Length: 286
Length: 299
Ligand SMILES: Nc1ncnc2c1ncn2[C@@H]1O[C@H](COP(=O)(O)OP(=O)(O)OP(=O)(O)O)[C@@H](O)[C@H]1O
Ligand SMILES: [Mg+2]
Image (cartoon, rainbow over all chains, first blue to last red; front, side, top):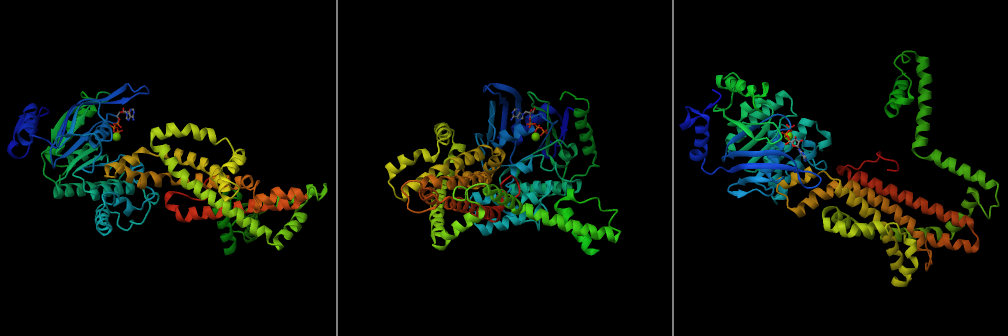
């Protein structure tokens, strides 16, 4: 089972992994929205030389409207990869492109949830003002953006806290503010770095369901980083497992092929869970 | 009893260290009463300390005692000084001079800050500006305004202009340095967040960089106010006909030490209260940017 995947639709049979991947690349998705080829990233040392090659030989294709989860041990370079996709960090080798154009800088088409909400939301703005920030930057009319912001504040369950400042919020509430801010900005590609890591189990589950619901509704492209295997299985269409840094890359990709909303009791779910867990338990090549 | 508890709770809130462990004593009314009076005394002492009344009392007492040993024309005590000041108050000089000086300080300080904040932002944001300006700022900020006194008067005349420029000069360095260090120390991730939300570089400066730096700018401008006040004497030393600096400087011709002292005290009071007002403004108007009043010494 480890070398093969099950896919819904026309490919819903069991095929050996390389064939499946080729099919995905060539037939379903001839030109993926995000295309990463043999990409590497160096963090430069004091002298500007390549200090550590964190990522090396990363290949990743993400099609329009897909939900991808990136799973990997702490410090393997997940945040680094996301920063490259968003355009906050320049890769040092290979190619990274969105819609056929190389990524060089951040753009409104790619929104990011930062791993640390404290560093990402604006402490001098209220929740409402934080959420409407992106819309304000793009010159949306006050009335419209307020309405939009309120809608997403409701979605993340922060109703009644609109006028509060970040210092008056808990960690999870700050993270939800960040999520609402991203959703309100209506980027086509949502890049999320462990967005639910700071939430309690219940809120986390609610947010996971909401995210899936919103994704199905809006058909946005989502790249979601987590190190929670269950979360990855609840959310992702594809799960990419990264190997350990340095020179980390995408070690393995799984096609989950389950309907939403998913239940942890599905046979496919438990099967994938144990397969993926195997990678982490025995260090299986990661 | 209720009062005793209220008193206990009140002090416990303000300074937990001064309240003895009260859990055991509270049930006994006598001890409770005693504690209530004790707590009240403590509250009064705390108020006197917090409000600075004790510091001022000690200063005046010390001054009065030292002055007993000297000739009052040479070293007037508080009482002689108040008498001297009274003369100046009665003929309106003190008020008029204070207002004149205050106006000059205010003008120089505002102009200096308005020049300095953008320079500081640019130094913090653009490498080339930093490389060009930083050495000069670091050099000139050690040369006090008074060194330029004669030059300024020669270049800009004996009127208001040279005086205000002197104050501007003195004010701007500390504001530049604080603003620039504020820009340089900000968390890049917030700027990155704004970028991913689609903010242009200009909007980032206005909507992220500036708000982020407001505490630093505020501190710089506040310190700049101090610099402006300390340079008013230099500004009014030559070619002035009114102002506190003029008063302080010319009173020596009449050997009116008490007037000099009055001028000094008045200058300090003006500075003290201007600063208070400015801080209150910061606390109310800039609260969302994280300016509170109890953080540091002198803040
Ligand atoms: N600015 C930096 N300079 C140098 N090395 C860095 C820098 N940022 C990250 N690294 C290194 O790159 C590696 C990957 O870091 P990254 O933050 O991408 O990991 P991650 O997978 O997101 O981890 P986590 O799950 O803990 O968030 C780490 O080994 C880290 O030491
Ligand atoms: Mg990370």
